[in-house]
Image 1 (cartoon, rainbow, N blue to C red):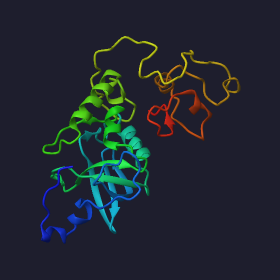
Image 2 (cartoon, rainbow, N blue to C red; image 1 turned 90 degrees about the horizontal axis):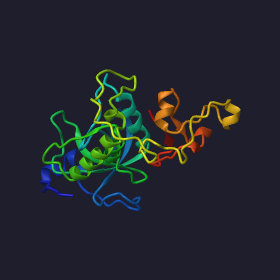
Image 3 (tube, rainbow, N blue to C red; image 1 turned 90 degrees about the vertical axis):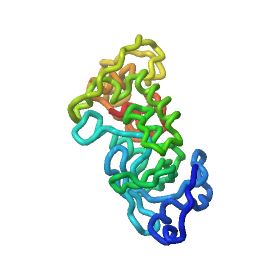
Image 4 (cartoon, rainbow, N blue to C red; image 1 turned 180 degrees about the vertical axis):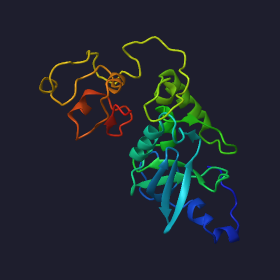
Length: 246
């Protein structure tokens, strides 16, 4: 992380609370050196959260990711994803870059959750937001753009050309690629066709589909680990305890 010199006057102010690198003891794997701890108190939107640190509340804008705005397709899905990665009252590890605030006064950070998941990167990788560069903050932009390319290729969420029902103006659909058994949307460990039998025959309450995309299209999902028996039917690729998120 590139650090700027902090004057004595600044160090005495509120800026010190969030930007001075303090030791992080027993940090989970994946937390970068120099990150500071805070407590999540509110999910504002897909790329904005409120945190509490040192008894003060700060509004944090996640760097290098732009999620859909209110009223747009996938807006609610992005909020839900951020909320799942950064549950209220959980610990978040914040890493600064060059510029500390945006024009709206929000603090600019990369966020890593209590399990070490890079939240900004996760949102881009799974199609909940686009990779954006706001110079001079560019620490992860190459990685973000690579993750965006994967999400676009796999036609995930904002790149699907479809709307999730949460708004208007879906993202234009990318050029389709041939469907195959190893398509990224194929979250099932096997290639079974949808099971149209009774709920009892499926061992759960919903029909079984070959992919989460098919389940979502039919109005089913998401499924939560330890809550829904259907969870075991699909692969939890990001390990967040949820499958078939819409």
